[in-house]
Image 1: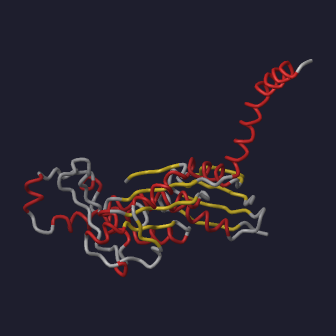
Image 2 (image 1 turned 90 degrees about the vertical axis):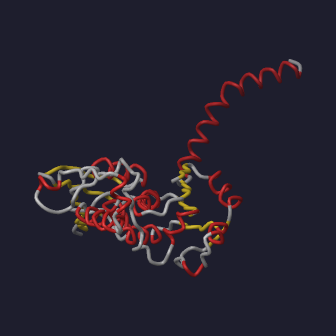
Image 3 (image 1 turned 30 degrees about the horizontal axis):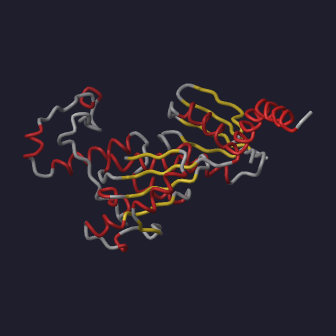
Length: 201
Length: 75
């Protein structure tokens, strides 16, 4: 048998056994590697504060490595005190407007308040926020500050966008000290590239 | 050794999972955690949690509107 024949034989045999072997090794590696997720948090209202903290704390509980990049209005979620976060029903037709107290028939009413009325009543957002917070506690949903603490405690890495910090005139001292890093898109993107799951919120 | 007990009744997603995770970390390997919850989403969530973390869901049952789980710490 000459070399060419031998090469041909080896090549054919490798083609037969390699794909299965590679699949097996890859599956082994995948099983060993913990999951990972990166989130871009861009919103600063009470309702939109929930998704990044719920998903990140849960992912951390599953043993994943998680980083959240807070940019634009999302920076509000990193402030030391987040009890000021508000929700706005204005221009948000998907938001049910129900009262979190009173008899069942009263709670069932969906208050369809026209935008022009909402916009004209001073303090309407504060009222809506107070009602939302009551609904949240009635339903055993975590208070937002508690959820953020749980996420931090579980090891979620929180990163601030330096450009937006400057843009909005914030100081690093405005934010919780657990934020170890302020950076830009060039730092975040390679993190996202390595992650199994990457979400924009 | 008696099972550790976590009362997650009245708590909603993701609190039962987060509290359970913390409680499991306090167990010895092989230790058991009993959980009572009222969030109907917890049934699928605890099954998925155990699949992901490699812990064993020993039992999952419903009594009235209370969901009862037992999880064994495996790793």
